[in-house]
Length: 193
Image 1 (cartoon, rainbow, N blue to C red):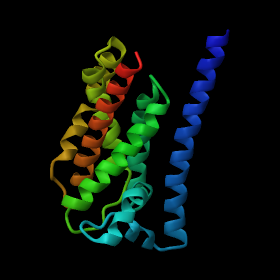
Image 2 (tube, rainbow, N blue to C red):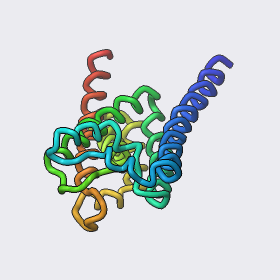
Image 3 (tube, rainbow, N blue to C red):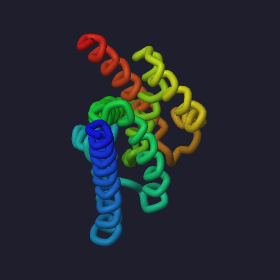
C-alpha cells in the first residue's frame, strides 16, 4: 500500500511540474499577445551581444505566436514526462543543462537573429533520453532509449539547418546539453552505488 501511495504522489508531482511549466509558457504568450504586442520576444537570445545573454534563461518561455507554442507543448509534456520516469529530479537537471548549454551555444554560434522557444530544451530532453541507456547501461534506461528512438527519433533531423526561421542551433546545442546531462547523471549514479 505504501508503494502505491508513493507512486501516486510521484505521478501527481510530475503532473504538477509539467502543468506549471506549460502554464508559464501559455501565460507568457498570452501576455505577450494581449499586452505587449509580441515585444517580449526581444528578450530571447541575441547571439554575440552581451544583452542577449539574458535570453539563455528567458528564451524557453517565449514563443513566436500560438502556432509555435502549440508545436512545442505536446513534445514538452511527453518528453518531459519521460525524462522523469526513473527519477523526477532528472527533469530539473536536464532542463538546466539544456537551457544553459543550449543557450550558450546559440549565443556563441547562432545566426544573427533573436532565438526564442522551448524547442532547445525539448531537444535536450530528446538527447538525454536517447543517450541515457548508453551512459547508464541498465535495462530500463536502454529500453526507454529504444522507445524514444522509435517514437521521436525522426526529430533528430531538426539539429540540421533546414528552415531559416527555425533555430536549428538551439536544437543542436540543446540536444548536446541533454547528452551531457545524461552523462553527468549516469556518473553521479555510479558514484552513489
